[in-house]
Image (cartoon, rainbow, N blue to C red; front, side):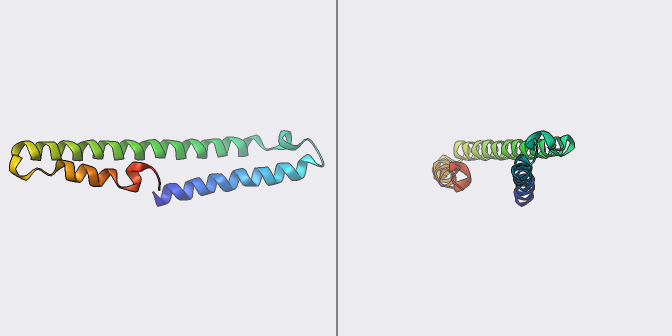
Length: 102
């Protein structure tokens, strides 16, 4: 997650650099048309890499969430006197990464 955050910051800084450069050149010339196409393509590729990393992370989280859910279900089925699924599922739903407010 830390590495992903660094990648996002890098892409964000690149785009901010463009905006600053294009604002300065817009007053003297054609602005965005002067932008280097290779810079634009490089930033697009960086943004695509970050997006793919997010998808991989999301898939990993979802698979682990489902696996944990299935383990708890199996535990409760095999040990009905010590059911714990509802307790852990409630605790998990209280976590910021599940609620999405981190």
